[in-house]
Image 1 (cartoon, rainbow, N blue to C red):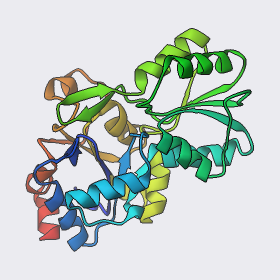
Image 2 (tube, one colour):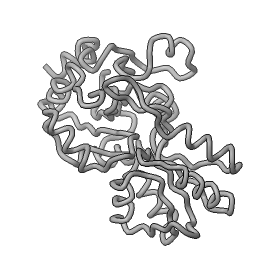
Image 3 (cartoon, rainbow, N blue to C red):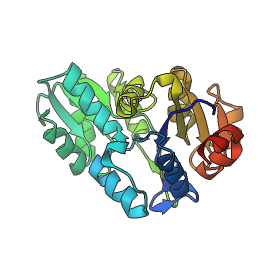
Length: 264
């Protein structure tokens, strides 16, 4: 942990589950703030915008800025504006997500769209899936905000976007461009946000195939917490290995003497 000067921190399963704060999460963030160590929250959940997450986190007691929050939606919108400016998008997403896309100046169309954009859609219907299928089959590009199979809740897990990516891929033969974690783009945004070199950052998260994989593929240190999706048996069977594994964020400071000495 010596030499770390910036934290990229997952939300669902790492700082909270559903509407319940994970013990020690508030204290962990306060310790980072007290010692002026930059941090950003990275979430793949694209069902809501940054304003929603800011309201949720502050309502839970986290004293943060909206600039501390980076979502897969934010990264996807940046990608579309950079690489597909002027192209029409058919979004499969919540009304809040669709509005966020529109507010960014992206053209939204139900017909003849150039791109099918799949987000974590709590309002998904057969009609939406069928329309997306026909658009992709007729040549539309396929872009997804993130690859997660499950979304953590207080009572377990709900189906996330991953199965729908595979469904559309299997039916159309197309391959989705996936933007969120473990995409390199999320790290680039975080590094710019914190003005911290890549080699000085650490990723904290609860998923091997997104959080820890993103760190592993980009030469960044990682801390896996066991309060979310990943369990100890998953680590043994995985090709992706974290730099450190802890029970929760509450253990991070206590498990590393160098880091604890630095911030006390």
